[in-house]
Image 1: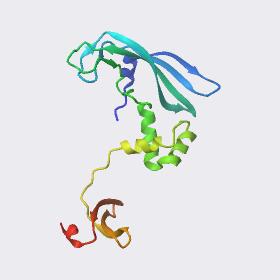
Image 2: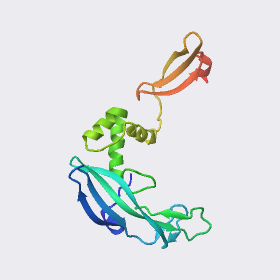
Image 3: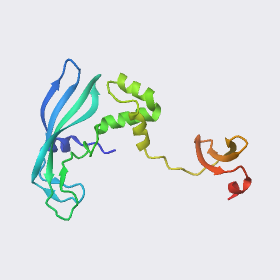
Image 4: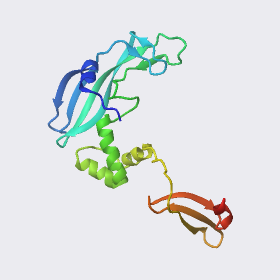
Length: 196
C-alpha cells in the first residue's frame, strides 16, 4: 500500500484548523486541497474550472484512544474534455483519498489487519477498544477485499469424501494439509475425477 510522503501531503493539502470536541472526544482536522489543476481520474486531462464544493469526512487512526476525523472541503471540477464520459469529477489527494473511501489508508490497513486475525464481531469489538468506531460487518467487508494468496506447489495432498446430502449425493474435497486450506471440491466420490 502506498502511503503518502510528508512532502507530497504538504504540497497538496492545506490544514485550516484542528478541533477537539470535548463531549464526543473526537479530534477533527479541517482541510482542503490546494493543487491546481485537478486531473480527471478517467482520462487524465487537467481542469481549472471549479463546478462546486462539498464537505467529505474520513476516519483516520486514533490519537491515543481519541477518534480522529479528517474533514475535507472537496472541489468538484467541470470537465474540459468533451470525449470523456465524465461531465464533472471530484479532486482526490494522492495517497490519502480514493473515491467513496470512508477510511484513511493507515486506518484501513489497521482494520484490515484486525479483520485477518479476528473478522466479524470480535474484530469490531477490538476496533472499538482501540478507539475506532466500526459496524460489525465492516471487518468482513475489508476481509473480502484482501487478495487471495497465490497457491504454490502442493507437496502433500489430502483427499476425503463427504456427503452433501446423506445417502444421496457425495463430493470429494482436496486439501493442502501443510497450508491448512482447501484446494478444490470434486463431484462424486469416485476415483475417475481425482485421476484426471
